[in-house]
Image (cartoon, rainbow, N blue to C red; front, side):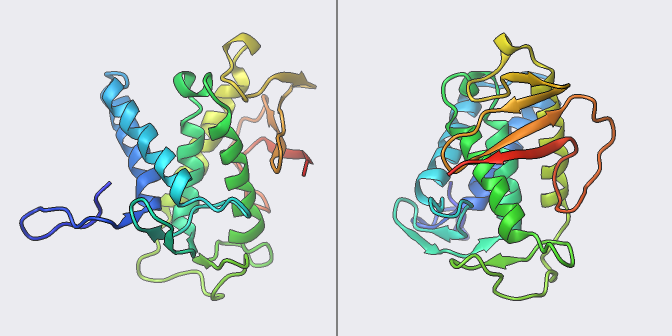
Length: 229
């Protein structure tokens, strides 16, 4: 997706913001949901291209998480990880778990689990709460301050609300209706999402009624059961 343009609306090539890629796919699909017209195949195809591009060129295969930006088809130029990008990423990756793509591959759900794990382990301040603005390649915050003029609460707030609701909907599905890699096993009123390599097993509480953000911050009813390596 072109990010910068000249005064004549000519795209300035070879610069990509991975966070805007994943945020845009969500905004496009959400707009069609609000209009009540269903997802246009062309919109779905573009959404998939955006998230696939971000995963191919801006994804950290070691720690998880999306880098800041880079060239369109080359290596990332900035390997810092901004908080808003990570929350938009976790929202978009789970959104790709809808019926069409979720039944074809579990790659998006595995990336969603790794993305959420990165946020919990590195982006969230477990001592004083809130999220660090930038995380370096070593997994450490580049600065301890968490707010500045450009920081807004809608990225993380929207992502947590959307992820919570989407996980609840997945938990209500019957086994035969579940996308590939989704919840598959009932366990004492919960649904177990199978773990893969470097991912986490997550249980979704079917009885969770109220949205609560607990420490560490996590969607209501979602609990880590185990971790595999």
